[in-house]
Image (cartoon, rainbow, N blue to C red; front, side, top):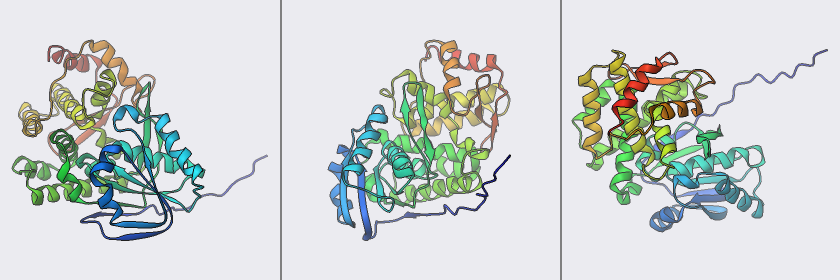
Length: 349
């Protein structure tokens, strides 16, 4: 005996990404701004001059990737329960990628899902983490292994927040911009080679192109069943580096930069990318003082950690390998010895 539940329907999760100075906005519901002490100290007063709500609360969680965990999620949820938030209430993620991921995840599970808005304050979160609905947290097994796809209702990218961004954080964001150019847009990469992203007007154009590139990919593959996985270029290697260094030595974008260099060396070994193209990517990353080397202590141990990656299975590892500049291959058939050979090259880095 079978009973069918006919749930087939189209859900419109479309939303706008606004790249401009924040407009004054009022929300006719309970709203909680989730942030950290550093961002709050720098920019909360500015944000509060722009937004108002029926009831407005501030939730502060510790700053840093190492706090992207269940304890911080519990802090957010407890505050929502204490203030009696309901399904019509809303969260605002006000910070970098860590805040955005955790706020989105808390929104996805509170009373089975409430709305949230992204107001990213770092370059990395503006061009990448705030767009696409990936939410989650880390655990002892790896990065972002617990989470959900939960799209924001809107993303507001205000360049004003970048005026106080430290140089390392700026570079980390540049890494994500370069990532999208290498994988999907050769002309964009060539633009970046000749651009000075320290120029505010040039930077805003780069943000626009990076966001447009990611938005196009997300629209084609929201839940990462196919082409969206290419946006993890550099991340397969980078996540292992973050795991090995307990998320304390490198910023996420810095680890991704090293991961891209490793992925490029793999591509060169597979004859998918020329040495010249790999050098051009490395030179562009180093132009913004991004790290491109890492000392691999054990190639075998590094390789085994790949299996904790969400894209991998029990027996195969999915790699994102560039094909020249502007194209990419998503494959689980990279020979182990090629990868080990590449990792061995970084043994004395």
